[in-house]
Length: 249
Length: 377
Image (cartoon, rainbow over the protein chains, first blue to last red):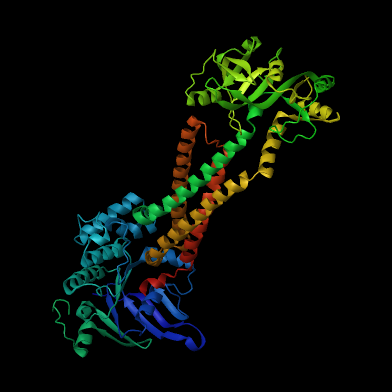
């Protein structure tokens, strides 16, 4: 599915938390590429640096050294204000706990990225409504997150991540709070969105039930990338108990 | 995004209600107490507002209008002899007990006007004419006297009589006056009759009211009077100001009201600050998500400020509105005093803005320190 053009390039990225004796090197020189049209999964044990890498890649965290390029543009030295605007335009986020604002309706939650990009309120709401309809939540626009199931909330979160047509979608454990069926449905949506030739989806996950959705799986351990394989190669080398639907494997 | 910020605020009903009630209470307490304070201050100057004169001449030791040290009768002539004075008339003012038709007693503020000019006459006559004071034993009473008489079941009207020092006083007119600090009714009569009503004393002249000649300022007349031994003069505005300053300096009124206003501020800060802190704290992870999604610190700070000042504005308005309702209801009864000059809403508005700034500062500090990456933790 992926095109040859890289969407994200990380080179020798180093990130250390704390100083002196308590310093923890979360990333020890990570190099990685993710391509347009690709759904890339980053897997590995807890504390291996997956989330740090994700944060550094999308520009919510500054690396100590190394370079990060998004769509051919280096974000390593980009001024904060410019980086924030860049992120608003180009990056969509899906969080583990969804992080939907509980006092906003589904439609209002989804409209936020459009509003952050300067869309008028009415237009943003209209786009959000259309996006919710695409993910099968037409008619639930006025529902608050507390009135929706976990799977529905995740679909709202996916709508929020996609509504402004970002080129990079960052997903942090997107199925961790979902049952199997809801997780599959969420991943179907993400898989579908990654088919866009001008989009790259990066998923950090522990959930082996969804590995087969990936085009490529990058394995990390102790702050380093230890392997990068196609999903089928990875699943062959790492057999696990969950049955994989053939269509995605 | 500012609309989103307001929706986040309005729909968090419990915290929103707490914020609004805290700020409303604070605004109400401050404006109501300040209004009553200003009302009391206005009461202290009631005589000045009920008796109009450009220049007031008093004993040299007098500091404010309600302090009467009697002058000699000759002092009227001394004032009249000044080059800047067009005319000067005596005014009697004293507190005396009146015996009502039912036998009960009521303290009154007896005001004796110059019988030829009626200088210092009531500005608003509700019934009767000031000139009727030339009739024997005649007095004009104010609406406060009527209220007090009616409260005692006495149907007072023109023609009703009562006694002052065993002498008959017949009501020939009813006027409207500003209530005084002591709360006693104003009873007007002529200067000569006032002296008859009062127990004889060596000196009975309370004030000399003077008018400057055309082209001469009241301040110039004041300067000329002050050059005379034993006399002191004030122009109307200065006497008004000096009276209020005297009450502020020499009574516990400002401290008493100031304490309540301070408590209002403290309560406002405590409730609004604490609730707004909780509001921001509870929303911190969502604000972090917004930051990750591309909301800059400036925008998030703007959202927090908008939320803080919106609650402040609504609380301020509600508090001021409730104070106005209170003021409107007490003004019908006449007590307690209530007067709200434009400075009171401005003062309360500034204090509420400061409370909101303080509350917002707590939230802003948290938002400014917020790292977008925390949303992944």
